[in-house]
Image 1 (cartoon, rainbow, N blue to C red):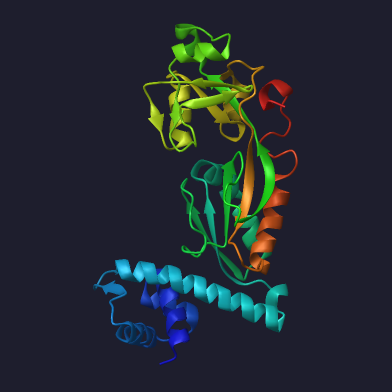
Image 2 (image 1 turned 60 degrees about the horizontal axis):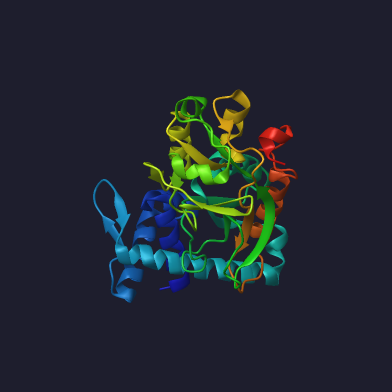
Length: 306
């Protein structure tokens, strides 16, 4: 058995969700694909794929193996490309981890243009707000929004500032009144983003305040809906609430007070040569985001927070 070939076939079966689809993609007959996977399972002594008449799914062991195999095959592909000069013609799978709300709103729309430019690259977008282990999960590049990146082993580039504002719906302020100082936020319902490094401690204009509220969430799109429904005050990025501010559905609170600065970082796995597809993706994103970033472009100072 050609184990390397079997690993490649197994990964393609997992990516495409079936033996027949993988066979078509690889130019093989389905029986050959099934045989390679079965031989790989016998060699490893484990079951990688559950097969039924209607569908297939990875076992827990199969999922773990897929992550390791994908990382190994990607490394091999990059090594071969560097030697043969194929890095000038990027190809293969690029796995990208994206923050949920930002990725859906501002990166997903960029992908069709990237795929059109580079038809031999496939992109696997993974949307979540947790900090992924790039090496363990076989991720080629991730975007993170933070004040700074604490892990010094990561290779990172700052792409753009991510401005945040305090805001609320007019209906909330009409009912609860508008705070005139940072300390007065303690008397208000504040909407808490639980994945923040300090969810209830807000740093505003260099002043720290502890806030509370009846609603918290681990997704900023959910908090935006609560804001629009008049449920309280929140710190929100302008990429998420800019249109609502411009339309008057939300208004700024304490507009002269600047929240703690955040930035959009693009991060690569540590200890790896930057592959052609990662480099091209990062360059494409930088041009797409622009300076100033596209979501802040054309706004007046009161909205953009500049």
